[in-house]
Amino acid sequence: MDYRIFTPKDRMEQLITTNYRLLNMLSRFGISLGVADRSIEEVCRLNGVDCSTFLAVVNLFNNPDNPQEDVEFSTEELISYLQKSHTYYIDYRLPAIRTELEKATQSGGKQMQYLILNYFDDYAAEVARHMNQENEEVFPYVQKLLVAYRMGENLSGGKNPHIFSEQHNSIDVRLGELIDIIVKYYPGGATNELNTVLYDIFVCQQDLESHNLIEDVLLVPQVKKMEEALQKKSEKRVEDDTLSERERDVLVHIVRGLTNKEIAAKMFLSVHTVNTHRKNIMNKLKIHSPAGLTIYAIVNKLVEIEDLDIQ
Image 1: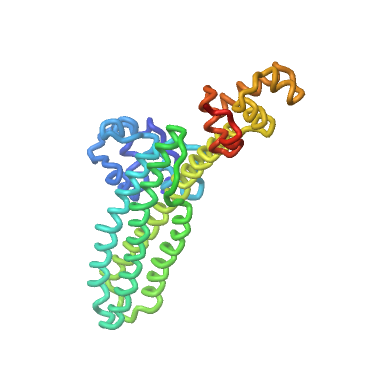
Image 2 (image 1 turned 90 degrees about the vertical axis):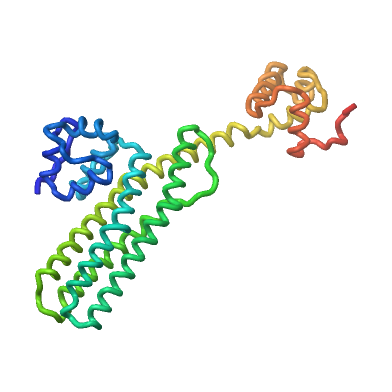
């Protein structure tokens, strides 16, 4: 198999024939066959797909042991791809394997068949729970986070998606255990049906590993990047809005009605320094009227209303 990095100018036909497993990528991105000799870039444009996102997923899928760093992709398009992947596994791939497995294990006896199918059903239910949790909690959180990141606003509440990636290992391991159990301990004779379904389970396991890798390598770092950027902005905003002790003292004198000259004499400062403090206070608080400064000082308990000469 030719593990390589594809570029927008490479032919889509070449991508498909290089690694047959990449066929699943096309349907999840909504790309039709009949690509002729068009480039990847042309096919993506014709199908309304963001080429950078498509290549980020394909190249990671095709080179899982050597992922590229700092690749560009659309977060919205990646989430759409992941959601379609979840639908593929839950509604099509796992039920199809279950049907094949039921037919293939008939020769091993009813008890063995029951145990194998029960194991697989538990596994499929675990996958469905994990993917539905991402659909219902993680992806909406990431979409809200993306809006906040673009607007430079704070985002309160929501699930942190990093914890969900921790469940990927158990999903991979359980399917591998089922393969080992059948290979080592299945009592029935070898059949084409059983070997075929085992092959399909192997392929499904590899596909799920790649799917989880896409989430862990592309989505989670992007989320961390946005969260950290918003956190820094929030901390800077708090820092910018916080008055120093000297500024609080100046503010108290301002709301008590003292002039800059009187404040300067009382605090042993120059009038110029007092004027600078006054400007900084107004800029930090975004309040420019004496009445507004008075309200701020009272609410934040810098002065008592009884101490002010309010008519």
